[in-house]
Length: 241
Image (cartoon, rainbow, N blue to C red):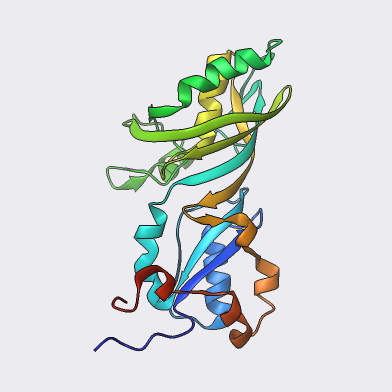
């Protein structure tokens, strides 16, 4: 006999604010509502904003499945400045003048990143080397060789060009480091680049337009929260969970 499902066994979509880790959001929701289990389906860096999928209570069983979904982002890269983390939180390691690039110049480079590509994870990442997360090695000033990983870029397009700033949209498979794309694009353009801003707009079938602002969620009572939760049965059917 299947255990009776609770209205709190489900998915909660959050529009993550900048300045918080994904774990911070999980912890705030878990503590505020007294949940035993809360997980998230795909880490966003602290500076990034946008769609963060939380799974509550028995819905934590869906975590791996939802985490494997394709993602979409909108972001801004800054040309001419490279950082050790490949984003705006890192230390500047190189600065070069930005050439007078045309839209065609930029498109020619972006085209190289569409489809199946190999990507080397950044040192400032949670990928492990001999059991140790790379970011812990990076904090000690160490750099190790990383194996490239296969990813797929479904779409990568420019939304606006105001040099040295390029605003773009990307749709990709899980495990893609958008900041590494920016760094690699900058290298091919001959001036370097880093990711300045990033917003996750989609994950699987979920869109950020469906997500709730965290401060709004955290003023709800436990009973009021029920109306914001997508029930687990929407995903797995009544014969599972």
